[in-house]
Image (cartoon, rainbow, N blue to C red; front, side, top):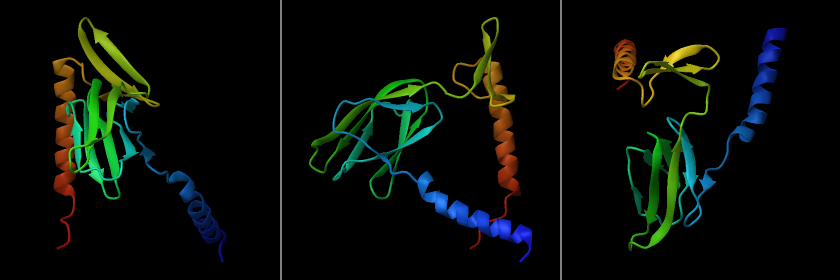
Length: 163
């Protein structure tokens, strides 16, 4: 067997052996009161209480939810602020209620001010523009136009899904 093939095979075994360490169970959420923190533009995976039939987010502009199979909830920070998350059973009984706090990004973000005009850069490791709530209209619009154009180009060049 050639050395490069041995290295690839050994790497596969190492990665397969390590993979379970990366897989974590969703965070169980207690019944009432404990604050759930999530970062802007990031998600957290949570475990819903058994018998959950209805979920309510106080302000879906601050945080959004997506329910997955097995009672898994994905909570995504959409904008700065605090809202709440409520889970009810089929009879309307409260199973869970928590405040949800959406924090600013935790990566290396730099805000550049020109008078009252603000542009935001993500510096991980090099500084590049990013779309951020609170940026000036001109900077926000220019960045959104670039992202929209890039996304349209990627989607138009993607192969058609198999039928």
